[in-house]
Amino acid sequence: MDKIPDGYVLVKRSVLDELDKYREFGSVEQLSGLCTQKQAVAIECRENKTVHVGHVSFGPGCTIWRCPRCGAFLTPAHKYCLECGQAVRFSEKGE
Image 1 (cartoon, rainbow, N blue to C red):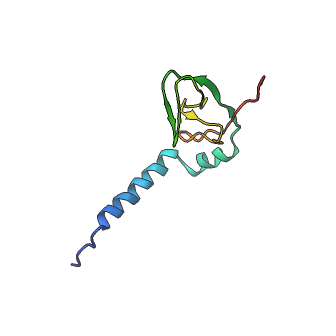
Image 2 (cartoon, helix red, strand yellow):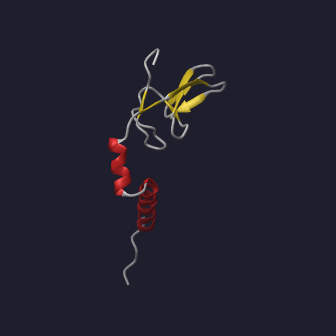
Image 3 (tube, one colour):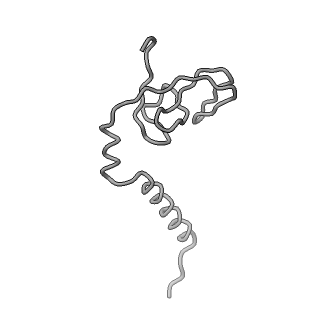
């Protein structure tokens, strides 16, 4: 029997891990629903601690937003929640 090339097992495990991530989202029908979902208004709040959203840090007392579906932190640059995929928009003053 031929020897398994070095790194093959690691690559296989990596591919299986990626597949598991996609399975967490559900079926193709559920994924296609993300494209047609209605945008929800992000919830504006202030935190008493430093919050990290991606590569951005917000100091205590800064305005930050949360996803109305799962509560993950967002910035106005986000069109979708990075955690649950909810389409979000940021309200205008008085909205």
